[in-house]
Length: 348
Image 1: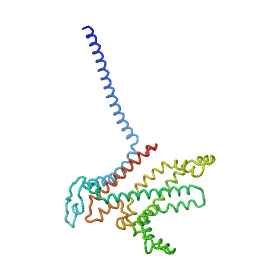
Image 2: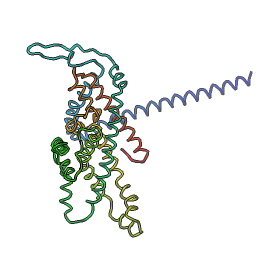
Image 3: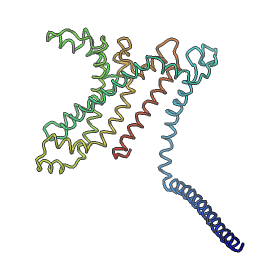
Image 4: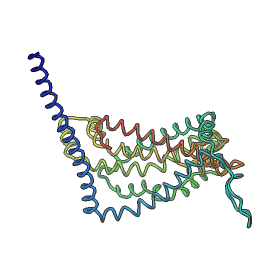
């Protein structure tokens, strides 16, 4: 009994110490949590108090972007979940107002679009169009940037000439190319005819039409790519090239081990931007071929436009569904691209 009593006393003492430690641990955890929250709140107040001028300057921009981008985005997502078309939306006919009668149908539009073979056709061609345009633009832009990064007579004039396509409004350039591609009176076919070559159906044949829209988009995108990469080239220290040349490195070795690593950050940024722009490049496709001949050059964004403004009855819900799917695809691409950059050690 004595032994049992002593053991119970010791156990009780241990339990008391343990409970006391647990209580102190919980109190410390609670205090640290409260302290962390207080610090965060204090840091936010300090940031607002210190940088109030910056917040005041940014606030109007955020408000405008919220109105211009945020509201249409929310409205588009909502419409994609309805059966809205030109027959059941609110409209005015003379002095008479007709209320909207469209209904909420959930994800039926997404099921219909994703199950339609047209979506896969448009997606495949859009991916081919984007990859081809971005790849060719990057290679040509990098080549021209390397040429213009050297000292030679008339370099400023060449730079101005190569930037010219960027300065001309896009629709003007597309209309000019449409005239050049004209089968009967186009300059390109006139030149070919002078050489004894039959006229090429640039915009009348599906294969040639795809080649034509890619060529025009590359021509429009080269100036941006060239200027961005030229800025990256000029930021690479010239001493690296001099040291490599003294060590006997060839031109290809200098390009591979100095130029390409030095342009990695700039290249990743311009490739991302160019991919997003090309994926949504509506003007070139619509103004040059109208998605034709037939529907051979239709991409996702022109199909969304067709559903909302060309087909009858105009289906606003399906058009919004195409738009939301385009947004989701680009978001997935951006997330995957960002993850790959982080694996390579790039912070973005």
